[in-house]
Image (cartoon, rainbow, N blue to C red; front, side):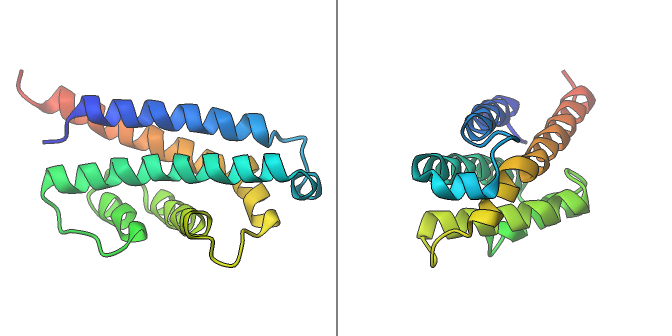
Length: 148
C-alpha cells in the first residue's frame, strides 16, 4: 500500500521546485533572454531536473509499493501509472517527455536546447502540476476507500 505521507512530501518538494523554476524563468523571459543569461539558464535547467526527479520518485514509489511490474525506463514508470488509472494517458506521455529532458540535463547529452528548456519552464510546468494533481487525487481516493 502506498504511504500517503511519502507521496505528500515528494509532491511538496515538487511544488517548491516548480516555484524555483518560475522564479528563474517567468513568462516574461523569452528563450533568447534565457539563452543570454547563463545563470538563469543553468538554474532553470537544474530546478526543472529536480522537479521531474520528484515526479519520477513519486512514480517509482507507487509502482514499487503497489507491486506492479518494474519499469525499464523512466518513461515507462508513467505508463504504469496510466495503465493503473493513477494518471491520464496524456499526462503519462507528457511526463515521458519531461523524463527525456531530465536525462538530457542530468547527463549533459550534447547540451540543452534553450528553446526546449524555455518551453518546458514556461508551459511544461503545467504538465508537472497536472501530474501532482492526478496523483494526489488517486492517493486521496484510495485513503478514503480503505478501511480505517
